[in-house]
Image 1: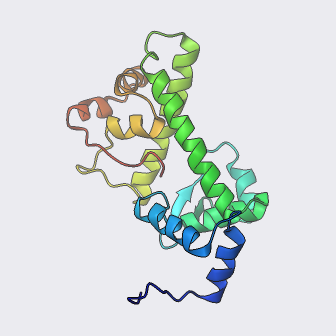
Image 2: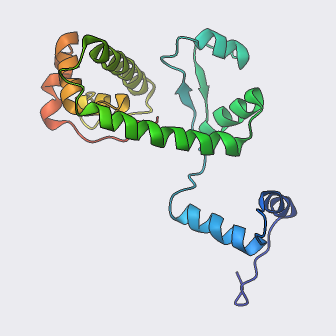
Length: 200
């Protein structure tokens, strides 16, 4: 960027900026807003370098593989490829998918956090729903450890990792582990490390 504040942009990017302009909005306004959002962490770039294992616990895995024309046993691709495939199949734009996904996840995180405080002692149906999420989280985290996308500090899966993935509070996860007989999670619970795999 020069001292006069000018910047050179590729013509293709300029076209995308013009297409995104709102009513009464100028190019500098939009660019400033986009850069500020990126620097604030609101715009997280899609990973196009590392393959990940998707739909690991999905009951529709076979249908997904058929739709994506995948012949391997698992659905493995980068995050960027996943979003682009979703856009191609659904007819939505990449921007719509990422924005709506972020909005849905934020609302879901709020409503789940409000319900976790009173989950213990509620009806068996609610406990069963939490158990199902914890079961899926346990299988998903085991798969991530197996394929190397998640590496626990001491080599053991922690109860904290499972509860974060399932969006369940720690006490609910502990009760679930006791009911399911996952003693290895209970033995490591005192030294469970915080993790960041809830969206992996």
